[in-house]
Length: 149
Image (cartoon, rainbow, N blue to C red; front, side):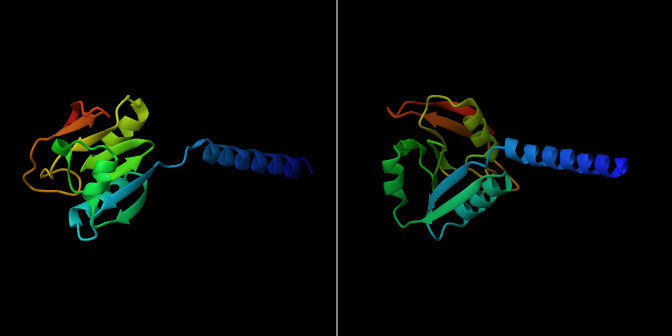
């Protein structure tokens, strides 16, 4: 009888430990992405952020410019797709680890952007990548550099 009681206790404690581990994890952030239905590099970027653990909701639109304007993306920083996550705007081919850093540090900015479509950025993979900057922008249009690749 004692081994049975000990066995039951061990199983109960093990189950509680496993359940507790799952309960402690925060759900993956949700990125809402606005892109053209025909943009192949945008779809590759979506795959990149999904592989990094983000949940993604995609809205295909023929008027991505209106989305950029609604979220205050400076014209000089625009790219082919725009995303929103936890109150921040993500413009263009921003690497997933940079988005995670943004969400961890929570700076007082509107968002981050990779203007254009630099070769070697996520979704724009290339055997000859170019160096590029990831910029910040705020609601007044002020910009800065957040990271380099």
